[in-house]
Amino acid sequence: MNDLPAPIPTAYTIRPATDLDVEQINGIINHEIAETVNNFNYGPRSLEDGLAWFRATIAGGYPVFVATTTTAGEGGEGGEEVVAGYSSLGSFRQKDGYRFTAEYSVYIHHEHRRRGLGKRLLKDLLIEAKLRNFHSIIGSISEGNQTSIDLAKAFGFRVVGTMKDNGYKFGRWIDNTFLELVFV
Ligand SMILES: CC(C)(COP(=O)(O)OP(=O)(O)OC[C@H]1O[C@@H](n2cnc3c(N)ncnc32)[C@H](O)[C@@H]1OP(=O)(O)O)[C@@H](O)C(=O)NCCC(=O)NCCS
Image (cartoon, rainbow, N blue to C red; front, side, top):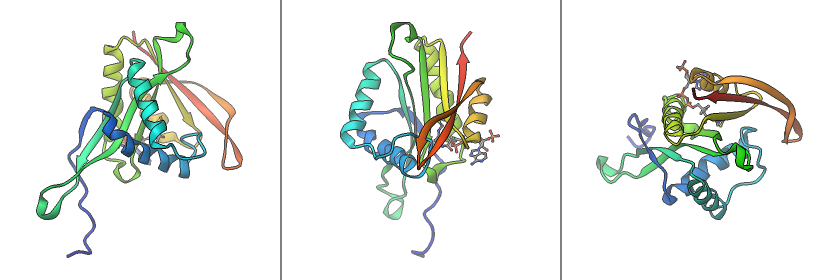
């Protein structure tokens, strides 16, 4: 019986993130940093840096959401809450005139993909963006990530262009595609 794989969770909750989620958000981000060009950092984000990012994001008036699920505990009881993905808005550019524009991020833990969480988190994030009076949302997607481009397009984003050799990671140049969604 012990050889059975862990059951795949089917129930997820989306809620605003708190300080207590940052360690697990970091886990998701740090996997992407180590394995992919979806994030242009080279080294892992520390808990201290993660907390600084989270607090500055919230203080800046930007939302952060998490998708959580509960692992099955012993005998089906006492499971732990696991962060399966997160979404956030952040500053696109610092200058005053850009304050109604925000850049979005959506990251799903690699073991929780293809269960609709990317869609759910992006949908809730865009609803919140509108409520907070943002006018334009920007996506920045590294090359080779057609899934993210298609996901954004499904919510009305349009590709505005691809910047060549915009990033450098793992010893090579990486193009970056920008998308925008303008609320009317
Ligand atoms: C992109 C990402 C957010 C998608 O999350 P997800 O929870 O797996 O996506 P969903 O289950 O909501 O699926 C959304 C759509 O993408 C499709 N899709 C998801 N993963 C796919 C894959 N690997 N290949 C092809 N299609 C895929 C789904 O089939 C679905 O399409 P549908 O609406 O036609 O059914 C996730 O892969 C991820 O976190 N990637 C790394 C981080 C990243 O690139 N973030 C975006 C930039 S900020």
